[in-house]
Length: 212
Ligand code: CTP
Image (cartoon, rainbow, N blue to C red; front, side, top):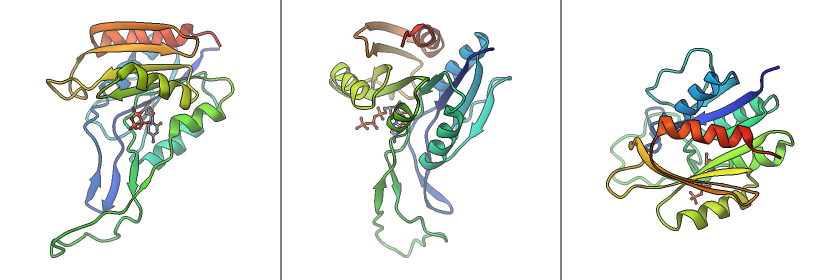
């Protein structure tokens, strides 16, 4: 029987009112490249995706979500049948406590949003799953390796893929990046100047070969 992988991609959107939201610059490219590569290798692939402009590859089970809470629900459901989970999504760390039910009018000269913390999907998934190999991403602006290592440990992950927010351009848009892959067994690999397509192959190699 073929193995199953759940991959998350893209940003989440957190509603402010019926027409506005808080989000981030994630394009979803990395997650979609990982999904393409997983399909190529014959894995049953579930792509849990926040809003992106990318067409899902044929053969993938696409689960569209909007908010972090939607993503959490979808991931925890799909995780039950998964052998691997890769969280490439840029999940919003906060959501608006009580989104307005009707459009907030501009007559309000200032607007204060009350934000509350979103659950950490990866931490929860790593705790719940006893059989799946769990991989996360770490996007850092400084101390990349140290921060990634902390995330690997604190979130209880098997593998973490770290990248640095590039100085010249937003990494979310950059297609050529450097990454460091760290795992809980102490392995450490650096890959420089790879396209997200090429890096997706390398990352999947590492994840599929990871020995519990
Ligand atoms: N992640 C998650 N749920 C969240 C936030 C992040 O599952 N609420 C996952 C991301 O998909 C990623 C990993 O956790 O795989 C690290 O995300 P990142 O934004 O780098 O780190 P945070 O945990 O949000 O910490 P910080 O923002 O303080 O760096």
